[in-house]
Structure formats: C-alpha cells, structure tokens
Image 1 (cartoon, helix red, strand yellow):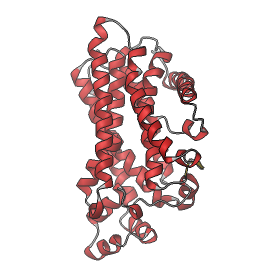
Image 2: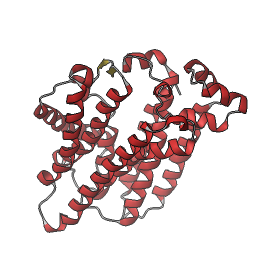
Image 3: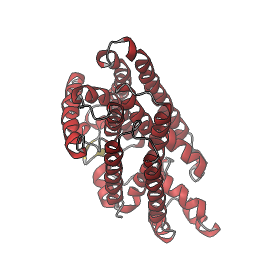
Image 4: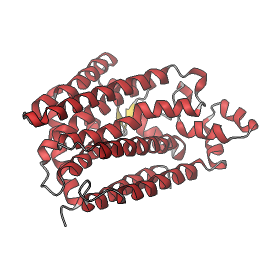
Length: 332
C-alpha cells in the first residue's frame, strides 16, 4: 500500500513549519504574515522527493530544509512585489515594507535569495554519488532566480503591451510557472532521482500548472473586490499600475473591436462586466480540466518501476486538491 498522502503531507508541513520559523527567526525581522501562504512550492518540492524515494519512509526534516530554499525565493519576490505595487497589506496584515522600510525590504530579499542557494551545502548528502545532484540543485535555483528577475524586468517595462497575450504568457512563465516546475525537479534531485523522462515530465507539469494557477490568481482581482481590499490593503487591479494580468489579456484576445476599446480604458468595473460577458472563468476552468485529464493520461502511461502506482494515485489527489482551492478563490 505504501504511505498515505494526507498523513505524509501533514508530517511534512509540520517539519517545514519548524524549519521555516527557525529561518525567519535568524533574520531577526519578525512578521506574522511571512508565515502565511498556500505552501504550494514547498509541497511541489516534497512530491518530487517522494517520487524519487519510492516506498521508502520519507526523511521529513531533510526535505523540509530543501523546501525552505524554494520558499525563500518565493517570499523574497513577494515582499518586493508588495513594495513595487504599492500594496499596503498581505493576508490582511501590514506588508513587510510598511512594517519596516523599503530599504530593509530590498536588502532582506537579496539576503533571502543568497541564503536559498547557500543552504544546499549544509544539508545535501556529502557523498560522491550526490555530487551531480548538488550541482543540478544549485543550477536549478540559479535558473529560477534568473527567470523570475527577467520576468519582473519585462513586467516593469510592459507599458502599452498590457493586452499582448503572448507577452503576458511569457512573463507569467518566467515569474510564476517556472518556479513550480523547478520546485518539483528540485525535490526529485534531492531524493537522488535522475530519470530524464521523469525530469521532463515534472518540468512540463509544473510549468503548465503554474501558468493556470497564475491565471486563476489574476482572476481574484475581479472575483471579490472587498476580499482583495482586505488582503492587499486596497483594490489593486494590476492594470492601474501597468502590471500583467493574464485574465485580462485572455479577455482582450477574444473580445470584439468595440469591447477592446472598453478594455483599454482599464476601468475595473467595466473589466469585471466583460470578464463575465466572455465567461473567462469558464475558459480558465476548461483549460485547467484539460490539463488535469492530460496529466492523468501521462502518469498512467509511466511504467511502475519509474513512478510507483501509489505515488501516481496520490499525486493526482494533491493536484486535484490544489485545483479546487484555486477554484474556490475565484468563486467557481
């Protein structure tokens, strides 16, 4: 039978919480909201690790330390994004730059990124067989940092390209999707996995799920403006500060010429009406369900000596759970 998904996830999250709190304590910048979040990226890392170890009992402390690195990258971008976008809060609590200062925010983010890479020397197995995987993990982390910063630079230079769907997709891939694909690979390497076919599967799965997750996240701005105001301290519709919004770019791509003109006005109320008119939520849901069906077929075609049936079954349950949580946020 092997391990049970709910049980091992709970044990992992407990171990991760301990490691994460210890890391934040070392920074001497306490802030409760830094403990909040979906933990999607650490969980993707954990599932990659489980795929590598098969039915072996997980080392929760070890993989929790690995997962802290990917969460450090994510949180570093979060505190910078809040400052750049002028958001006053996150999860209803004061944003980091509000509690401290923009200067400290920038320096701490840089420190977190450096810490994310250096941490590997402290916990990856110091054996010759792990040398290649250490190199792969370090390279993955470096590539993730490069991609996220490249995406951020592109977003800051968007200007009049706010409705260019292909450009927005590219930015979303760099800023959001790639970190999920890299997270699950990171976990797989950390468990001493090395099958090239599985690595490619994990990259494509993480990238695609990350893109759809971002699309659903961008729809939140039009799902419940009151909840958004509490979450961020004001209603941030992205477009008012010339930031990407995949949902709006999707809308613009299929809208009539007359409606395109209405979209270009960037009025949140108008955009909400048009998103309903063109049923963008259903479009994103259909794409997500298509991804899930495709993933199901792909996983079932993998031989059991590469991915255990137990892992396949329970990873699908995990993706389904994450999908439903995202649906709930946008009122589906």
